[in-house]
Length: 424
Image 1 (cartoon, one colour):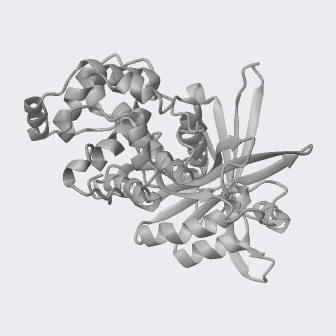
Image 2: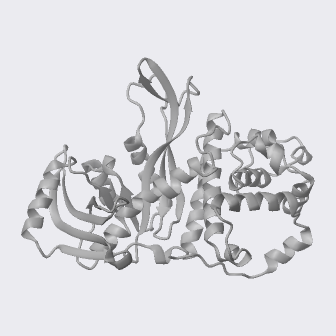
Image 3: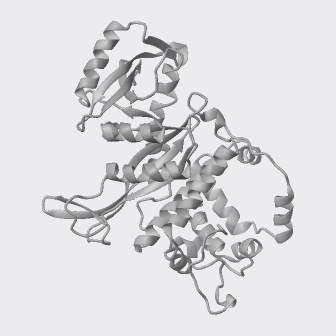
């Protein structure tokens, strides 16, 4: 946080009461404690005990008012705060925390999906997207999110691209695909050598995405439905009928009650609307398991890929690759919207500040996951805390009631420790 450029330009150094890292930390803490609104900063983060901790950490006498924090955050460059998110995820990669979670022992799974963030009855800013139904227009903001997802439940933001109109009254609005074409080169430039496997839904099943991934050197697993790319589905069925060896069965669950049937085909040719030819593989998984009513339920998953699917990697590509795409929605958007972070709440009305708060929320989610899955929490609370919301509550109460004195802080940072994470 200390590396960000402070937008304030005081006449004298003493004109700045709160250093920029203190205000950024305060914003992250608001999300970590899941306060749900900026006005709660004044009620819950600003007491005498917290002021002593703030003084230990930042050398200031008290915690800043929420409006003071907001004024500075809204003046930041969103790109600089985005870089904080990128750098934190990069640190986890460099520290080899995620090595064991790589697909086929090599690829980092990056799930990309869009979600709504804010909705308004009246136009909020020139960048608003619009939707009109029954004569009523709704104004809203969306974002395309790239998250590094893992088998053991981590979902870390690695880069974001806001979906927004560049000017009012555009005939063709911005959308997820357009945002993806902006996001992809940014992601490649920032993580040039990172071996990436993109996990995408059927919206991205098309020639432009296939070609872009080929040029960038990325692998992909894209959800394929029966009514998508008709010629590809037909050729897949034909090849599967001829290649009976491309078939596996896996039984899991208690007493093998869950049966997964895999089949695949390589070398499927697809010609897009621009007459560009692409060679693809299709991998299918049919999962049959008992439903609550006692009957068996079968769910079919099918993916397009530029991996060469084989007997020794088909199961891993399906279960530890394609199936992980849902984590961007479950461990990502769902938790951020319904788990106390209040992603859909307007923490500010400033269009720049909206982006800054979004990035701080992503940082808080990353830290919360590391806390919840880390060995230090289990050591301190062997019986757990009951839920992620309880963890946030304990953190808030510690902030309000357990001051951190300078001597204690110095003692803490001198200790060499190793934090291990749940890899199950």
